[in-house]
Amino acid sequence: MAEAINKKAAIIGGGVIGGGWAARFLLNGWDVAVFDPDPQAERKINEVLANARRSLPALYDRSLPEEGKLTFHDDMAKAVSDAQWIQESVPEQLALKHKILAQIQAHAPSDCLIGSSTSGFKPSELQQGSIKPEKIIVAHPFNPVYLLPLIEVVPSAATDAATLEAGCDVLRSVGLKPLVVRKEIDAHIADRLLEAVWREGLWLVHDEVATTEEIDDAIRYGFGLRWAQMGLFETYRIAGGEAGMEHFIGQFGPALKWPWTKLMDVPELTPELTARIAQQSDDQSGHMSIRDLERLRDDNLVGMMRALKKSGSGAGGTINDHEASLPEPMPINDLPVTGDRQIPQSWTDYNGHMNEAHYVEVSSQASDRFMELVGADANYIASGGSYFTVETHVCYLHEISAGDHIRVTTQLIKGEGKKLHLFHRLINDEGAVAATIETMLLHVDLKTRRTSEPGGVVATNLAEMAKRHADLPKPDQLGRAIG
Image (tube, rainbow, N blue to C red; front, side):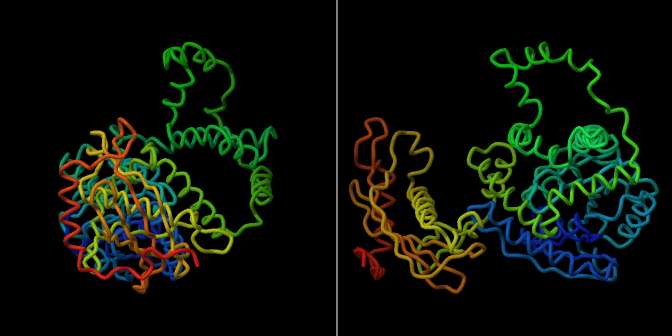
């Protein structure tokens, strides 16, 4: 299913979640057909897409596939025809979901898997009365779907292992992290945890212990940051010190019997309590529009997930895995493409264009990729050899702004002996060279930390690359001094 040539996803229901699904598939190269009777569906989804185009590619250091084609339909049969994946995201009413799922299966390809975005219903409940129950599973996402990678995948007894794995392959192919829930249970896993925190939060507001902002502060300045990389149990394992989880449970386990929690009860959501919560929420962030809050949320998520990407922890590992599966770019003007990416918002400064430091970062990434191409890859470095940068010269020709797509080509100027002389060009979507970066590197023995001759395979590959680049014209900016 994930290997389809013309990949098409059908999104049934174009609200916040359906729009996020549409963006996730579309920006990963799938054609997307949307069915939603809401006359505002197209406007709403295009607004979600604007945020997604701004943020999702910013997670990656390589370009996502070329965007697919987005279409809107008032005929469900046309929307689901030829689809390889169908995602149902209609309101949480079981009777409505039964009706919509029956309509989908009446027109969908016989082998097409249908994922439901339900946050609470079990798959066996969704499958009741279905002509093909084995093709319906729960695929519960988290908002914003186009950024957060977690998808709770819940099969029933009717779902065979091959079908389940094929569905997970599709989800992984668009950068998601399938979490297969091993037993059917109301509200799955994550929402049950969220519900516990939500209940306690309602009581804290009800009892006037804390405001909505103070409760959010307790999460975002404290344990929320730990949870982003380690979750619940690994966080507590560290809290147990060198003795680990067993010590933690022995020390803090007795507190679970103390009368702290009101998890088995919920305050009545009276008009007064609802009004208090709404007013406190407005006081907290009412000065910003929902779209402004979404963009702030997305920028913060990109920043945190990019930090996790560096270590491969949590969501960062999913991004790294997805990035590694993206296709390699084709050469430009007989030069290898050593960078192909969108510029993230965090790379821009007060003038609105890319900061100088990130030109050097792009150069570093391009040099690393060139090293891999000639054999100085991770295995080579582990064996004790590498290149160190000793000099860099940047020439700025055109502004580069957040959201711009750039490709980097690398020309080998000289690759003899210890020296590696490279010339990078940053090319924008108009085909213009926006900047050039000339860099000199020296080969180093990592054991002695002294310069040395490169190993045989690298020297051989550099000699072959030098022959291919020998007849290329020398860049105008090569060797230029300041001014």
